[in-house]
Image (cartoon, rainbow, N blue to C red; front, side, top):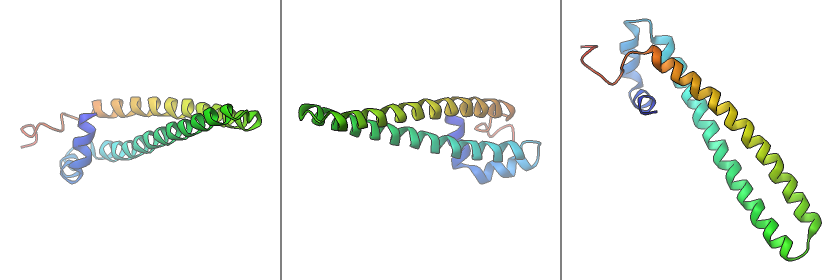
Length: 115
């Protein structure tokens, strides 16, 4: 997503360029979709960390024969796994939408076409 990084760091320049064409709405949409994408990626990281913590607890509790506590952590891991699948699916759809929007823009990193 190199173009998205360029768009994110050069928002004002791109907005000025887009005003002269039909791309202003696309730029705003891309910035919003990018923010959503980053939030989803953050949530994926959080879920992974939570699952690791539960996994470590399961290991310790299994060693101590704390079966009810183990089962509780396993259920939480299952719920987190389901959430992770949902978030990944949402992220996949969002990334496709971003790719489609990027195709509508001219090569934003090439300055010669705007000069």
